[in-house]
Length: 412
Image 1 (cartoon, rainbow, N blue to C red):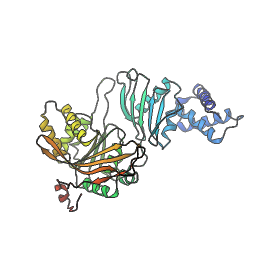
Image 2: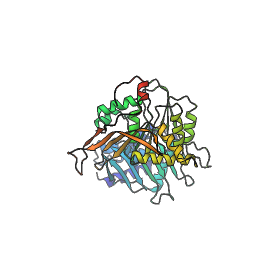
Image 3: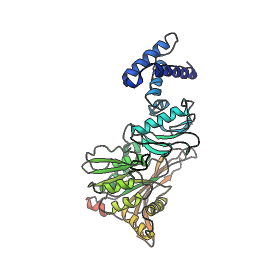
Image 4: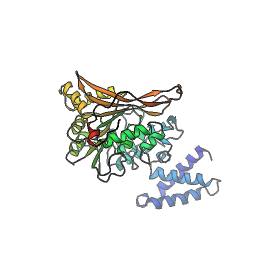
């Protein structure tokens, strides 16, 4: 059966179901059964394989109770990202490559209905007065929605799919982002309560890396995670509190920001604070938390290098405390952050750890950096394929006080 024929059958059966069944009073299981009966009856005189018949029934059900076209995309584990630019333009990322789908939503109205359902599931609102929202799907996938008239091409949805299995350092080693030796060193740094900041560009794997690193946190500690949309999967920590921001409602009230959550978390007796991503004035609160006895904190930020990240942190702190002298900001950053890890998405779409750098201190008006590991391409690298490894520099770790405190006498 051709794709167009299948779409036509789905459309006709959906129309029949919505016009003839009491949908409001039917449970999902009951509706599914009824749709399967109708599909079987409708196709009784047509040769259709069992898998196609099941696919038609599933498409009808998801167009009524599910997320329509999105259901089949989200169930495909090989798809990592979904980009919807209006009802007719649907793009996916598969194996690091972007491609446009032939499938499209029935109409802009149908896409808007699905958006409202997604947003409503997380208790959020999106409308003309509040046309931009960050939310998540029930499985934890990160969702960004922008509605017209802000989005000129129609309702725009970007979904970063949620991995069903938590990311681990072992998987990062398997993917070639790290080596076993460096992973062991990072574990020691996390356990010794070094404040670690992960930076990189969009899609470089910051949240993935943060998730893997956070699983090195000792299981008996009290950990508070703070995110725009909850997606961290920290396993094994019993004393775990996950906090999530909230947008303002249609009346413009009720907003809870990352900054509010950091301030609140300090009164919750945390041993570690994990901030999913800092983007603005909350950077000041995060640095102050790191400086006031909450060692071992982890966070991420967007930047193209470790030096760029320091500049961005300065700018973000100024957003939170306009008029603070730059010297005071740099001293605050230098004393708060211990280690910076820079990630990058390279020309062959692979994600690599490019640099692990120690923040040594503040001297002559500048924050001093001490690169410990730097990525170097080897002779096997080509324009199409990047080959290389993280190489240990000759610089020793300067601030080893926390290592000594935990009783570690080796080298990092």
